[in-house]
Image (cartoon, rainbow, N blue to C red; front, side):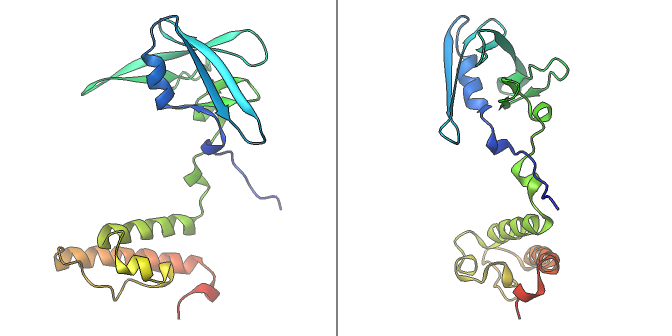
Amino acid sequence: MKTRYRKRTIEFERLDSKVLSAVSKLSAGQDYNLRWECEKDISLKLSGWRDQSGFCVYKRKCLTAYRINIIYQDTGFGQRPLWVCPNGYCSERCLKLFYSWKQDIFLCRQCIHVSYVSQNDSKADYLSHKIISLREELWGKDSIYLKYGDGLMESCDDWEKPKWMKWPKFIIKRSKIIELEMAYWSLIPKTTLPL
């Protein structure tokens, strides 16, 4: 049986908020060069220029260019620039556009069919991340329990209450962690469970 694999956002070159911020500060007609170091000794070099309402990018294989519009969304503290997906059917506003080598164009996540890394996690992975983050929230990242403990194989039943926390709140938070630990232990093989 073939394992299912989805393309993830970290595998693509992207126009992110840093590029967007730099491009939106350019005046009309100014050039901007983009460069990414990709896998397998391949580098992607693109150049473009700023026009009145967007950013024009030259395609790699031919001398034609396409426009990526930039719009400004009003916020409580000013305006925020956003890319508009150049796919005519989509026109999604977003902070990141991903480069499609096949189509030689930047597209939004929905058009290029890309998933986030966390969408590929199993339920056990999700629960382990959640348990660790709740333990760090309750006892702190530098806690002796987290540094020298047995990881997720040790229950937090006997761990002491932090000095600054009241008992009712501590009991509620600890019981939530214990509930997640039980769900996590039911998903992993019995040979790795604590005795």
